[in-house]
Length: 477
Image (cartoon, rainbow, N blue to C red):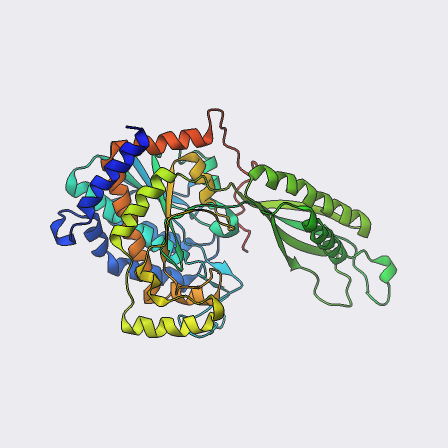
């Protein structure tokens, strides 16, 4: 019997244990999660209220650390040169299982927990990607796994990695680069979504930078000949990049926003800045595209009589899928079987669904597990770098109304609603039972590790897309 076949057989055998009623499991990782429901809801709501941006999540990170410290976890704080990054660990011996916890919000969008568009006055950010739920759900899972390890006497260590600034800050990349995952055996990860899925989904590699043009100011009407517009430099670069799009491969994604372009039309701006993202499924292709992007910046500066420099802000490798682990988690997720809305939640969700138009999906999908498949996701995440450092398994849980897109007001509202916390609890259960399976099943561990080693290849050497820069702790200021 092959190692993978042995792993699958062992997984199916173990599945029978977790399919028993909760009352028949003593002790049970699922029951341990259920006992933490109030904590999940409280922590998720508090982080949602704060909505702190990347590398500025002082209160959110502090809350998670406080909860973990109260449960007996040993903490390493301010790791990888990042004040809000931390590692919390409990246990000894056995496999080291890592869980990831994010907690940064998105700028430029905000929303109350209402089912209609309702911005919150004076609030410039929101958890429109559900990272408040991510952090709270992973916290609950870590505590539940700790309690299960303690109650069963199972050897092993559970670690929660507090990972800031996923949204454009690549917090995990700096942690990987610092070697903080070198002794981790497996990582269990999740993300909020509009459906429940363990699809083996890879991601796009990406890199971003702020391109800063500098020129000469003058009165736009009285002395235009004396000026050299930094904004012209930005616009010339954008024009050339938009022409470049025609000559890139299908997986390429390039997008930008002008972050500074001047203050008054009658003052020629001597400074302007544009923030670019480049994505592709192949990290080497991102590097090749980046050289072309830099050439457009140089050409734009030359043609407009300005100067330009740039700062790389973040960069993520594509996610390395481990199908052995994904299929094992898929079995676990189907045993858990999704969840349902209360009548009040259905009424609220129906209002959200009506706002989604053709994207809306049946609300009862929250009780379903989507078919397992292998897909390319067109987003990017710093989990990608973690997945090249240690075998990583991920799930997505229906924290948002079916049909909802991330980075929308609807996802922000759901992330602050009871249905969001309910999805986080579901994710925590899946993470806890998957971790228990990994502690108990040496055949599964061996098969997953063998696939990981084969996928990376014998000559693999880790290389980040960030270079040797320090964490950009002020990139959201």
